[in-house]
Image (cartoon, rainbow, N blue to C red; front, side):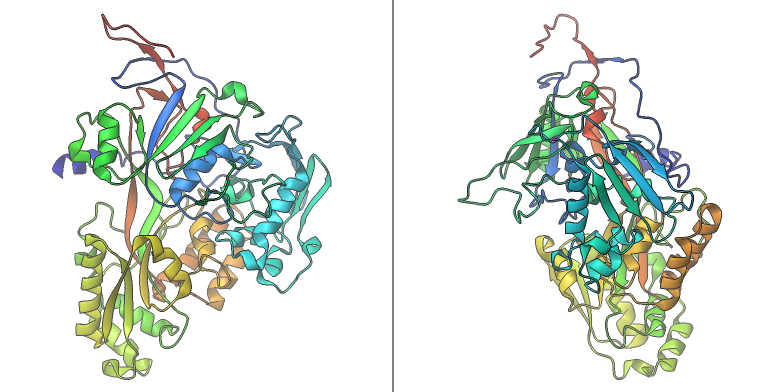
Length: 549
């Protein structure tokens, strides 16, 4: 552990993100290639094998939730903008150019003339409109539909208070023009548009409910518009090939990507040791790696936290939630982690310092419970802590349960849910406290704060606070430092009123040799667009023949 702890702290000097800018930038330029030694097991300069931890992959980005799916989507889908592989700033993608109105509330995008789907069909502005409207359909309950609330009429349509899609501010006056009207100026809008939920869907896919293979049913890969398209998918792997209709195909170096699903950390380590997989993006047994030169660790715009379900009494009372947070042994809970978190949002440059939860105060906790009418825990229902089956979750849950029993006299039960059902169970309710790990979907504090809005589909905490809503609304018409200060006020409400219980900030761990691959950079979202990845020019070892297949 000491070796990896030293290694981890050695990379903390890397900036998370320099600012919360949202202005699009130029696309990455091709750099002079270095030489790398051909590794044992390497197959080709144009074929890359990646290892993902096994889970049911969702190909319909309207339903997607997992980080590994977001990584896959960088290959097969593309929106108006995409992520710069290093800075994460918006890079023009399907949008060739755009015009912002003087009041900063209307964006007019021009779709590239050579933008095409993987079957050769042109990408039209109406395809974007249809995809975005479909995400907002109330019955779909798309996880990221609340991202669209910045658009005029989107919030009302997804909540069902308005059933006419024509009232949503998304218009396609001609095949190459997409007009988007916002509720308020949103300086971060281009950064949001990098997220896969703002992608485009081929007309043949828009009404399909199942995009992945279903047993005993005929299946064809989804028609997509990214730099790669899907060739096959089964329980073992996904195979992608370069999309010859992609508008920027000359920049794409790889011809083939194989994503292998690993059952456990040992299998992933074997794929690396054998040279078959050149990037391990899932769980891996580091101790089993024979070559550790590929270990990449960097801080992420990500936080692991517990939260209190505020849906009903008495958990909807901020005094009760605050008392619960003050009763916890924070130093003991967080001592296990490299980056203990006192706040929800990692302290990015420009974002004001927020006073977080740092220590317990049993006296204040007991007084708050008395004020709320629950002295000595009388009249309280059972408190259910819901976790997945892991050693760390069990440790934290035990510390929390003991504190709430001993200090506040709560009746506490810990409930363990299998990982494959855990996140769906949070949507269904029936718990008081649960945990999650959240990676910001774009490099801005709003990526965390929007999910606590009362009607957000991501609000598993069922948090509902008028003061919080007012601050988020106010931030939407602000810019720069003033906006960030308002967002910091909103975060302070989440902390002070016991909605969120931060545990730690998360490092990203990947196994990839950047001396072997170009275009792969550690970054704050742990998103690495496949478009830019290529093998460096190989120089074989002396006396070794090189096979260029």
